[in-house]
Amino acid sequence: MVTCLIDNTDHEDLEALHKYLRKLKVKQEEYYIKYLPRFDKWSGKQIPFTNVERYLNTEFLHKNNLKAFVKTGSQESKDWAIKWLEKRKQEKDLIYPPLQAELRTLMAPTIPYYEYIGGYNKICQSLGYQIKFNGAPSSDIQKIDGPIVVDTREQAPLKIDHETVSKSLVCGDYGLAEPYDKGIYIERKSFTDFINTLSDRENKKGDSNFARFNREIERAGETGAYIVMLVEHSISECSAFDSIPFLRIQLGKLKVTPDHIFYNLRSLIKKYNNFQPLFVKNRNEAAEAVVKLLAMGDAVKEFDIHLAYEQGKIIKNEE
Image (cartoon, rainbow, N blue to C red):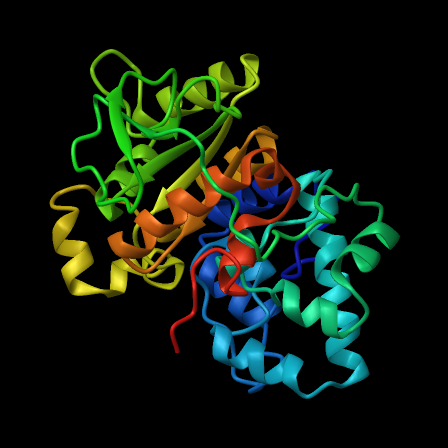
């Protein structure tokens, strides 16, 4: 039950409450700002109303305030961070802990912070998550014995520092030739490819790119294949493309928000155990990542790929 704070009447759920507000001719924004005001936990400034779900789940105006809050090292900030993971599990019915790429797109601390306050896996396990990744990639790059296969449908092949051969792959854009194939396939995405793939706008046949990509991952899983979606653009820019002019221009007339795109990405991560994303800075890094990931073979399935990238374990850090 939900109580209307205007007249203390009870309603079955939020939808019923909102219907009642319309009857009272009270806008949702007016109601929530007046009766359920929310304030940034760091700055104390009032949080503006956008939509009900976002408003009720927003505790910081932006990520800089979140970072400042957790950097205090206070017990309050630690308790809040752990509570966030617990709440996320309950609300999204999660089995496995969020990946680093997921946390980067949410108003949440990232894995290194949780490692600092007690260990990410240890904390998640205490909250009832099943631990998916315990390993980390080896610092030694293994030798690839055979050529790297570039799918014949690949429109903009990367300049890979390894022998390549053009053949049709069962899935993805890059893999290994028999008998060296370990079932790891790299699906390369430019920025626009990434957005279009995760767009669920339906065509005239009632299908969408997102639905087709779901089916592709599902078919790959049925054959034991593992898909790494390699985006040749940073996650920070991809998750804020609506405020970056040159990226917005690339999308043309496609009207879509980062929230929606990354909601769809997180749904893929939750749904499929044979899928992970990796965001890199550019095509040069993407080319290096293809070689490194394919050289790792089955080990790719054992660690959080984007976390390993941020730790400098996928791409060599030249700085």
